[in-house]
Image 1 (tube, rainbow, N blue to C red):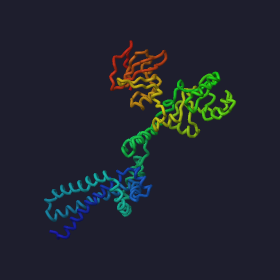
Image 2: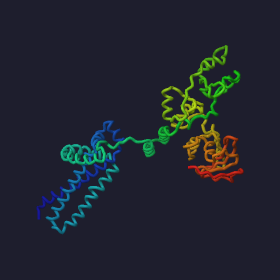
Image 3: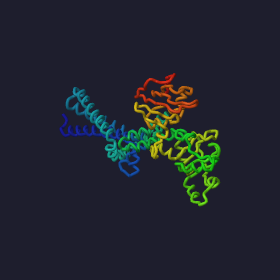
Image 4: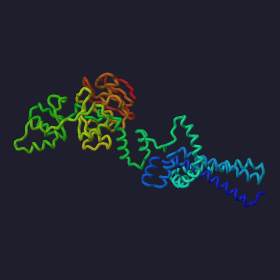
Length: 437
């Protein structure tokens, strides 16, 4: 039998090895579980623990190599001590029991418990642990450097760079997930605004423009009395002015500039009006919203005429329309009302054929396909490959649509039944069932 004091010393050392295993296991898990962006934020603000952790994570190969070295060392020492104590106290017959007990102790107290706690509280473990880990890594640098050199040589065969902290740039969809997972930390309104910013590149000017047929403009070739009447009745700050056709826009009238002419006692005439028109600003039809927002800022413009590849005017877009994609509706009259969307008592909606599919999806939570035609009229005609007659019914993506009024060239009004609303018997002479995803 060995003396009591050496036995107590060995048992104490064994306990210390188990604590060491817990330290290395917990520290490794905590450092790898740290939020890299929060870590950078704290380090930039001067947090000492965050700065030490950032330094450790600059070379994950060295960090992991040292932690595995330390963990392997304490496990081997613990096994040797347990073997010595068992042989001296119980002989070879006690090795099986002690091996089983030591395995359970190392798994529970040296691996599972510290790793679980560290994963749930990475900052509480990593920041204090880094205070001890840095000097230990410095002391063991010659050993870890040799091991890392061999490991990195093998990694290079697989074209893997050991440097880096793992804080890679996030793409748009990953950022959406981060914002969504933020939960109550970001107010719902702010989350919607962030989603709006992230979605700017997914839409283009054509998705939000006012169609050509709905542009309020002044034809300067009309009688002067009619021109003045249009100016007086106009509710907009900026109005395009043209001669003969909308494709011949000669300038943009700003009502603030018109006030100077109206102060003249002699009145003003057609030429005076032309003299104060601003140069029109043109926008390509397929410009994405993110680019157009920057262009508005660079060009110091608030309104642009949207043109297609042939130079024909297709619509009009304002910075207000673009900003509403980010912050939501803020105009006095909601845009959906101007599109003629009228809820019905049976749960259906009467929708103007010129309503934009994207507006319907955003405003009512619908899921019409928006990759193709931009308006409800276009979506219907694309599904049927024909101009439907009044009374025709069809189904698109789970939505039943009944044509209420159509002309020879377009759908003017349609009744839309969302999936949860059961439509009545379809009217008209013809019924179709078209499925579009």
